[in-house]
Image (cartoon, rainbow, N blue to C red; front, side, top):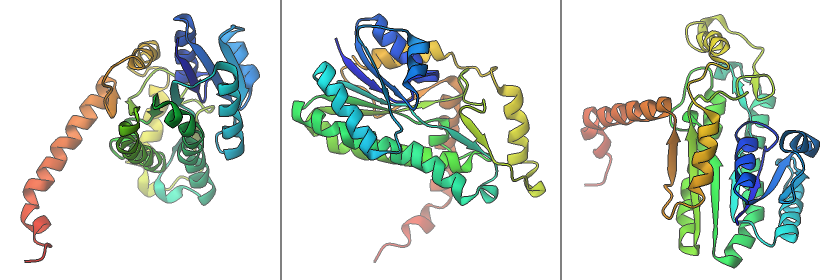
Amino acid sequence: MKTWFITGASRGFGALVADRALARGDAVVATARNPEAIIARLGHHPNLLALALDVTSEAQARAAIDAAVARFGSIDVLLNNAGFGLMGAVEGATPTEVEAIFRTNVVGLLNVTRAVLPHMRKRRSGRILNISSIGGSRGAAGFGVYCSAKFAVEGLSEALHGELAPLGIQVTVVEPGYFRTDFLDATSLSVSPVIIEDYAATAGHVRNVATGLNHNQPGDPAKLAKVLVDLADAPNPPVRLPLGSDTVAAIAAKHASDAAILADWHEVSVSTDFG
């Protein structure tokens, strides 16, 4: 039996993973700002501990981790799932909107991760799964600020992977594409009220497309949840795990684009060395 600690567990990927982990006999510490929403979604279960957690509070993160260890003795898997998106042109994003995105998606992830690491280091064991996005692999018009936060999650995850692997702790950053969750609903996605007509063909176009894509996304959230629960047992998990055919296609296209840049600008790129 493994013990999971899941943030943002009242809905979406977090709730699906929690449900599947409980079904296979694991213990789950499910957290959200409103723990009653967790019970409403998952029901009462002897292996479930529902806790209130605002990930932007370092004190709350440490208290929740301590409560989890007190109840189950250890934390084997941390799933950093809490987060939300922002749609709109980069120029139109207000400082308040930008700060909110980074406070939850980046600082919140760091708060929980730093709180759990002393326990995992002591046991020389543990897994950390950080939910990123297709937007963590490539920036996209209309989601620039959100992508920048997920780029930060990617960099942190890669660095943590290097720091923690010698200590027996494995880190994977998960890169979902468009899955049929509530991510494009108002509960998970903020839409900047600032509309600049010059961006009608780029960020403005994305606003229109997102409306039609909502609840018609190609990805199956239940299948993603199964992959993540199975990943907890994988002997050699990857540092990055793209999920969804759209993510795979986006990464392949970016690799091809980057390869072309290296080829076209190679002489300029290497010309800046001494000698």
